[in-house]
Length: 265
Image 1 (tube, one colour):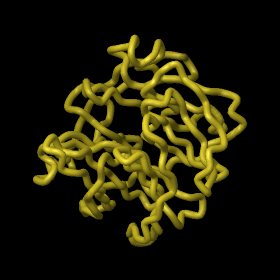
Image 2 (cartoon, rainbow, N blue to C red):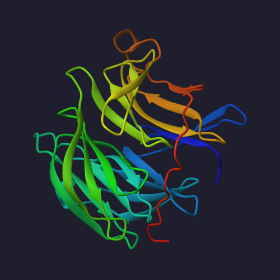
Image 3 (cartoon, rainbow, N blue to C red):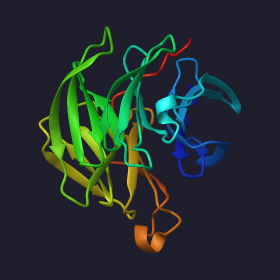
């Protein structure tokens, strides 16, 4: 693997990467909007974009797996996650007419299955350390749920409310650390929050940017927390650090290795 961090500027259809060893960063792709991606087992990136498109990117070469989803022509994918078996769970945004989004599962053979709809805004996902349950964020009602997850089949059942945040604090991207605690980027809250497996707030890290969008652990021992923040086109409203990528050290916690996708490999 490259040992570089990739992140997205969704509205402008741009993707960047950062090399912690050299401190250099660069834009490495621009095209249609991409709402989320996973790292493939062969090192490529599986990108989930507008109209339900799913494409593989590798150093500027793009290959299409799904051109579009008829039901998502007015929408785009948002956050996605690879599961332990190499499948990908991928959620969509609500449509301009207010129609809710959906959660899909992309299997390793390229089969795409709609699991359920009625989602205000599909967002961050994660797995419990025992791989028995999966977290899923619906940002519009400011709620995070858990589902019973079957690693063998990729099925989801038994939806339960994990947490609901107060108005003004919207859960966005998510990661689960090595101890099974849930970290949420808080859109509108200028912070990231660590929650216990029972849903209690345990820690809060403030950032100089109001729109915290996503986060992940990285580095040789997965102890560096990286946070992406939006709103860089209006720092007066969104904070002096809006639109930035942040590295937080010294949290005292470590992440769990992310799963890689194995779609069409």
